[in-house]
Every structure is written in C-alpha cells, then in structure tokens.
Length: 124
Image 1: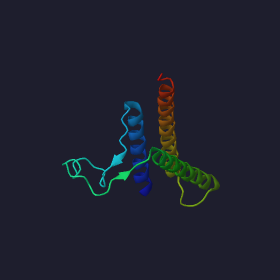
Image 2: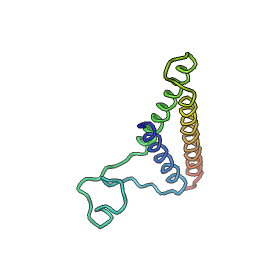
Image 3: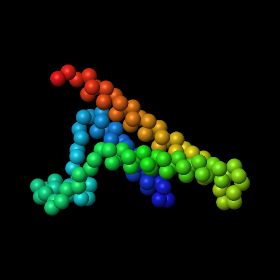
C-alpha cells in the first residue's frame, strides 16, 4: 500500500514539474502545509518558509522511479525462479507501475530539454 502512496506522490510531483516547465511559472516557496487557503493566503506569513530546490525535487523523483523499477525487477526475478507467494498479478501490476513511472520521467525530461532549448535560443 505504501508503494501506491509513493507512486501517487511521485506522479504528482512530476506532473507539477511538467506544468511548471510548460507554463514558465516556478514557485520556489512552499508554505508549511503546502496547501492553498492556509495562513499565508490570509495575509499572515508563516515564521519559516521552506525553499524547495528544483534539483532536489528532480533527484527525488528519479530515485523513486529507480526504486519502483528495482522492485518490479525483483518481483519478476522471484516469479521466474518460482518463489512462493509471488503471483503473476503482482508482477504485472509492478511492471505497469514501473512502465508508467519511467514514461512520465521521460516526458518530464523532454519538457525540460525543450525549455532549455528555448532559453538557449533567447537573444539578449
């Protein structure tokens, strides 16, 4: 069950990074709750604001995709070797999660490269 939460969290992070890359908006500060309608929205600034670095978000997302792929590979190997307790359904679900996560990561990479090319071609 925890893998579902990590996968959802990772996909949300990757989608938000993709949206930020395509829209040009890069919010660098997140309030403590990370939710709209908190004290900051009411005009009250929290005592401490966390800075979120893009590189750390990207690194975290890549590490999560790597972990999902390792888990999928491990389940495949266990199934092929005939380990008890591993059924085909688990293997197929893990494989699909791995495929979706990797595909999403590739799309984010493509958007980042496109944004980089656009910035590189800007004349100053």
